[in-house]
Length: 205
Image (cartoon, rainbow, N blue to C red; front, side):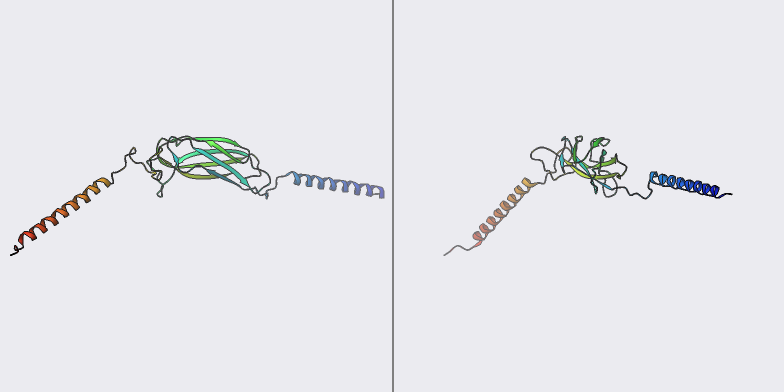
């Protein structure tokens, strides 16, 4: 093999190696990074607590993330009866338990009108955020609230079913009359004793 042939073969080999290296580098740069970490989001949902029966529920929700980019996407809201300690839903609660709504989210705090509730009870509103951008993770949150009776003169701190608004009689007026009767009886008995003592005393000479 002549020197010219050897030089030509070396050049061809060098070009082939360079082409393979460039192709491998291009493929590596275009492949997805399996070690990339998604950004965690935080969803916060709230309502007034308590609310009164037959009043529209105002739901506020926002999504935040430790990123200069505001996460956007959609938020799905749903309602369910709050659970007791033993995992049982309160039987007194009545309302739109199957209510759900999905809204677009573009940042900030948004307000969504929920349903109204015809009866007192304990409820849970849940919010689930689904991001549009794959760099963010989805997140969810829940909020418990009470539904109480409305109207002036109602006790807003009583959140249990009161059998149609009929409160048990505590016997306040009856107790007052009973005490008054005891006093009168005691006073009468005292007067009788005094009269008898005076009648039994000997008359002065």
